[in-house]
Image: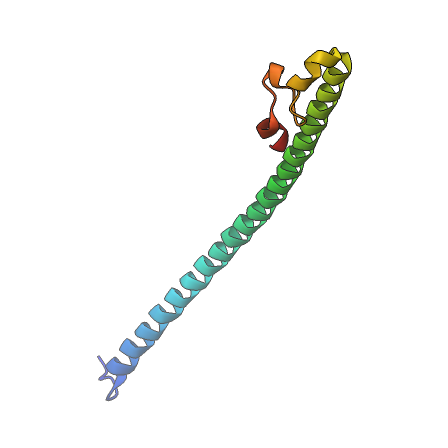
Length: 107
């Protein structure tokens, strides 16, 4: 067998080390791409959930306003139907006989 030139073993070992580093870098890059894809999916899902939350919040606000208006209409109707001597039972904010008071109207 032929003798290897001086330093050939060291060059070969260094080439193997560099090859391993390149393989590791390639694997990290591939993992980074997968991580970035998952992060993008999570970001999209978060945006969807935030939009849904905003829509639900708007619905709740609208329903609260509708409930407040219905309480007001109930109060007006009750006041109109009550004989004058019973109207003092109304507290001006809700119909106390029906358990609807200022606290309910404010909510």
